[in-house]
Length: 371
Ligand SMILES: [Zn+2]
Image (cartoon, rainbow, N blue to C red; front, side, top):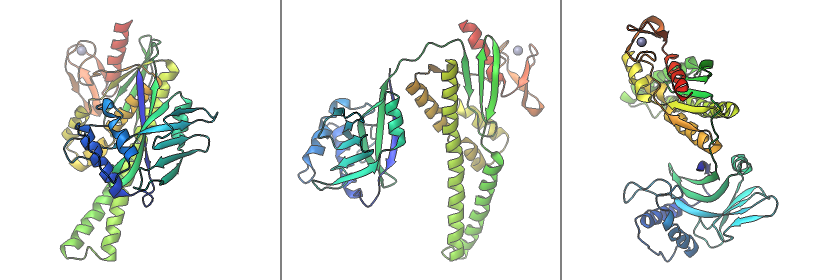
């Protein structure tokens, strides 16, 4: 199986011409749609290699298919790799040079419409790490995100998932309020169980601080004073708090994905993911939380699932998506009733467990079925 991982590197704006990249992206969109257009004042080498990518259409190399005629498609580029031991791979004329000897990435002709224009960026540790794991970076893409130039490097690796040892690592994705619950199951027993979440107090404090400042800003706006020093300061403070909230949940998501994949690797476990995020959202709605707070408690959970899947693929951890119910009895299949303190009880057979533990009983059931 071929696994991929992608890294985005922000290119120094100023050395990269946004208009030029924009034009290249428009051209890529056309190439995507099967049109071969040769633009005289754009470098032939870049255009030529764009059309040589035709056969990869729809593959990861091209990235996501642009949605409309004017959607901007990232420009696929070939790479030339120079390794520490002086060995080389790829096309020596490729626009992107990954020079591991000098520890730099060189971008040729893709940052400015000048024949000999080269931009050098330091080689990220991430790239060296992926290479040392047996990956290779055959392709790169250049494009704009929020009108800033970026280089996307896609590492590729041939990997066979290992044979599971009998351990199951079950991951139940909830909202951040109750956290991501995971349990390690072996020989019909729950070996370990944990609920992981960021510091909720910190998140909510930041949230209410932002809301308070937004209200103040709104009041200033109504009397036309929002462009004053005070108004601008409030806006800055709101923005800072909002992005900090985002960063906290994003970092937690990445941290957890990597921790769980490492755990699966350690036990050679089969990874089972329940990512029914909608159910968690409904639970929060039933608790009558404000929509904004729900959004906050759900932020970056999709990202967590994507990262978990990407890492599992990359490291050859066998995984599957499976429903691990928290409201259905794992013994008899009846609907569970929620009592105080989120304890779930089965009226039919008497099964009783904390809500976040119920999915682990489903994982146990799965394991016994697999022997
Ligand atoms: Zn039951």
